[in-house]
Length: 414
Figure 1 (cartoon, rainbow, N blue to C red):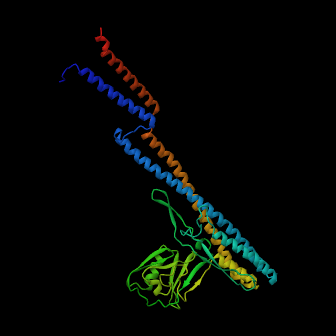
Figure 2: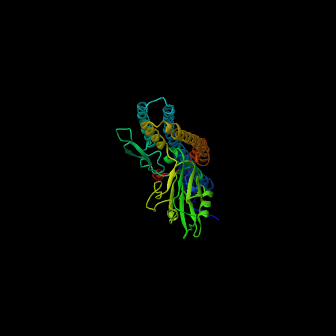
């Protein structure tokens, strides 16, 4: 039951006007902000969808950016690898020429000059940096020079030449997210890209009676392998061979030493992560020495890099050793070229995959943008129509109120 009073019509009119002004103000704010939802309470279900869509859209755009950045890195890396392949092919041409036996020692020394310049170009490519100043072939150690060179005197040359090239990076990889919990691997290790032969490591210590005296962890080519207390050498070999490492281990039948061999052209990376298992087996020195140059005294290593092959070729030219050029040198150069071709094919495949991910993310971003628009964007036609209706209603109410209260001060001054 309502109490009728002289104030009732005024209060009802004022309440209706305030409500209309609130709706009119909300319509104006929607048009000015171009958003249908100004507060979460306007439509809680739509607001929940909108927040999730906007969050996902941000992630999709980051995935697209990651894929494009990665494809750019692959393209730059592939360019240097392609140029290195051309250098190696030219070196091989010179090796075939130098091995035919028709050139005298003076001619071969002249050829050695070109080979030395090609070697410098190969090292220059291996130490390339990108537009951000990061080393391309140093793994994740991007601030370091990928390869250090050692100069020295070489028989047959009157000036110091490159005697040795040592890898200064690491074998760690970057995982770049290009989809929800999906990653592309960026593997820039130069001791894989510029390696010519499968590397072999032959232990010098008798390991047949060895047994682990405590739990430990070893790293073989970046893969951690847990060794339990009481494991013998055969158990360790079995664990290494069953791991994801691209390495096969065996026990030397003559010397009973622990041997390793990579399954493709790369430099072997061995390290004691916890404990001293590899040190006890005589494979590596103490933990203060970092791989790959931490192998123990007496350990023999076979299988070198492309730099080693070119250096050996140059030195053979300087000494006039045609037999070595036509045998060992030419064979190693072929292995290096084959390895680089395989790495190039892998790099090209990675580039294509990165491009496909970028294209997919771009299309997905458009689809998610449509979902965001459906839930949060304002329908201008409907909004302007509502605004005009609200404005018309407000004007009508004001007009009606003015007629209801037409008396003014002048009515009392007659």
